[in-house]
Length: 396
Ligand SMILES: *Cc1c(COP(=O)(O)O)cnc(C)c1O
Image (cartoon, rainbow, N blue to C red; front, side):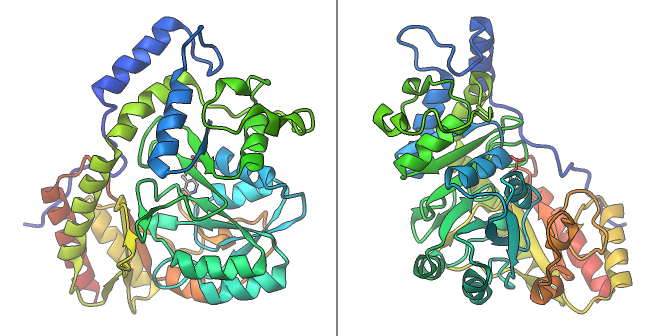
């Protein structure tokens, strides 16, 4: 009898009871807007910003309406102007090129390596050829490039790095939290990320002027003195009337839901990695299947797993995917000419000038991806890996 997996790949954990109680408190108060506080009250959003700033180890943090909004706002706060080139990964999620488009700028895509990170050689060449002064670096699927080597290149070229940490909240490179390396870092608290408020995001930085612009852009209604993780009011004096209000604030209800989840984040990371490592162990040594190398300096969050299947032609891939899916295992394949569901490949974004990344094309043609919700047990991981191995062997 063939085994089948009955779990749901999009089912996340329930919101913790402490978070539900905190959310109910906010609703009872009626004070959902972040600036609607009573005398002496900090407000859930400000408290969350303090806790997140401390978690990442940076002085300034702004909570906003989504991860994509955080990215757009970071670009604007860096004074990227319409028409400017912005370097970014050829393999990432659609809100990344979408945020560049929202700022009126132009995405210049950089190749990836078989470690699923940005290709530093191509980056170095495009820093010169594009004239870009900003790199939006996506730690796509939680794979972190050698940050020391990357910063040597970008520093030499005078390119500022925005880190897209949507998949690296809780991760580190060489002991340094992901999000501390760039000039500014953005996170998402959307349901499929590492903490869940439905929608939401953060911008963190050490740059006072940048944070002042981001705060005004997010729609502070000149109430920025109510924040505790932004620069002092004098930094705002020069720019307060020159910076448009592009509302995208976080509210107290979402912040209340997130605070207990942030407290538990390191436990969640351990739970994800136990599942990731179990899957990796079970998938290892499967003929034709290649796992992604994880460097020693990378402390990852295994909230998804990727692998290459070598030497399969398109028909074989379709039957492999069909076999897995008929047994309840949902895999995403990035090689399809016309994408199904969400898009992660540079040539799917047709509002961007046409570009060619042959190495990325060849890699994505063999790349598979699977979410690892924490609702899966370790035994579920065994069943899933067993199904993938059997289906891969049948095609090899
Ligand atoms: C989810 C995600 C974002 C931000 O997404 P929002 O849905 O706008 O919060 C940014 N980059 C990557 C790689 C993502 O997966």
